[in-house]
Image 1 (cartoon, rainbow, N blue to C red):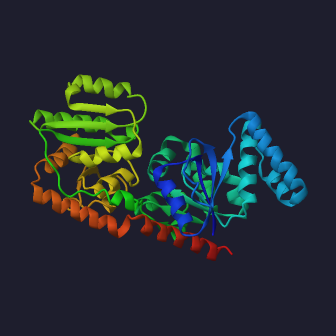
Image 2 (image 1 turned 120 degrees about the horizontal axis):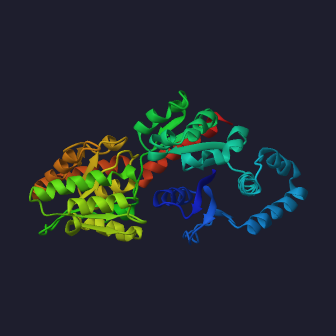
Image 3 (image 1 turned 45 degrees about the vertical axis):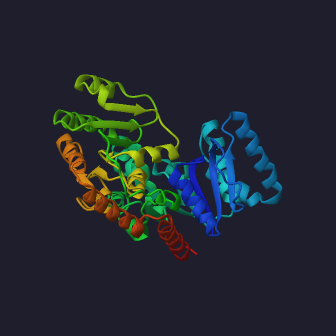
Length: 396
């Protein structure tokens, strides 16, 4: 198959890069278009093709003129078809969309997999045109939260979901949430849970050396949806109860004033360490060395960091948001706490703190079994290939 992965940046997130490289390893022709941020490491893949958005005003103009003159003589029908689709009034929007559309159409694709639901309207005319099959990936915040805070996004979903030919959802819960925009979309959906690579799976360590501190770690951006305010309240509960807790947050960007004030107000300075982002490999090392991973979000899909913690042998305490109960069985593969309730989060953390070595190892092994069933990259690729095949068979 000829498959485009539309994620708007090159390289994209770890899980999207794993997907496109996995598809290439299986012999598919994979195409990716977006802004070039750094070397994506595609040099060993002859079947991955990049289309790079020049970003600058003059760069985009040069890119467009190159296609205009080429297609005017080689495929004028395609050129005028795309010109008919791109109707944006502002120059900046028109030139970006023209370059994107003309690139995608010229690749003669079977499938375009749009990775971020919030960007779906960028391809509105292409989706409705129907010449290329479109698949939309449904993840966490983009479906659970963004349409609530952004009414226009809700309208976009209601307008475009009926035209999209396949949906890849990261959990069953996401499908249930998304069907409010198109009641028939579950019939065109496949659940392909997030996955980890064999390299991450091989970092597993069953043995664990306890230290004088109970090391808690959270990974994720500074945003209210991540629930850090509740985590800090839970930390205060543990400290006051005499638990030698130490909390590390790895999150890129400036720490919000709200959290700074809360740390000051609760007098937690000596119990917390906030790190401004790290490379993925270093994040994994931090997770592997911690006593527990805390995922305290108000809403999520299924965060990769939860799967990675399970893979490397670190117990997980997570709030009960969205698809989490599909991967964590409370008391078996981890502990589930009630979102937005610090007492419940603290209770989950305290259970991990009180585990003996045998209980910890049993939970780690059960979590690893769960990963092997649904969350290895090969399993994910099987489900996504199944979806692509269904779409092609249904829209020949």
